[in-house]
Length: 313
Ligand code: SAH
Image (cartoon, rainbow, N blue to C red; front, side, top):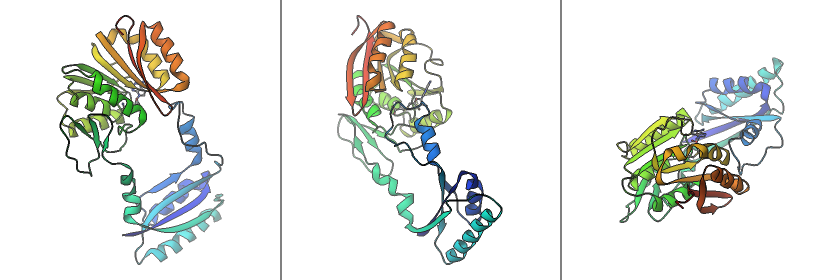
């Protein structure tokens, strides 16, 4: 099917009026591309590193919508142009007021992102398989069925992939694992499939917990993996043989003082999401809590560490 992608570059002030106009014209939804929001995201403090460039010009916002390019499209476009003029006539500043229309094929925008996600053997055993692909696992492989969605963690991000590879060696059959900041549940699901007997997956974000739950069920490991909302260890009673925490340096540092109370004898913390510049601070925080970095991994600008009690490393 053919669609018309209509796009209007305008002022922040005009965004709501323009979105409503697009929706009245029959668009099922509008996309708002606001460079100021991208900068907010970069500076939110949630990320130590992001490869999204800082947006220089934040004065204009682009509102986009998709309309079916059927026989009524020319009339709809004429009505849209008139509606945009009317908004300006009401005294709303709509500048730069750049209107454009592009024809796109259905699959171009509805399915094109699928081209970026393929079945991926992340480690020696762990394979990530999106639901729209077929895969015949080889002996010894564990397959995680995961689609990109509302929570972080398809398994292919370097911080996650490093954890998955390390977990292939760290997980022992029958182990208890705590996954702190579970996101999509990827590490918790891998822990269960690699042989853990009990996995607790927590996140402080309710959406992540819901998405993790769905993925855990879809992967058939709901009998092993439980979920909860929790700020770091706060809702996690008891001890684990392995704690996985793919967070950022600040959160790993905040978690370390409580680690001793949550680790079994001989247990380890697998921490990831740490950028090069912060590794020394994490080492110092580990030292202060009675731990040492027993093993380090790095990929791109990211570091992952296996942290053990001093004397047990
Ligand atoms: N474990 C997944 C997701 C990592 S992203 C993976 O390895 O791919 C980090 C996750 O930590 C996010 O889902 C975020 O919501 C969660 N998080 C951030 N701060 C947290 C906190 N204080 N307590 C628990 N979870 C937290």
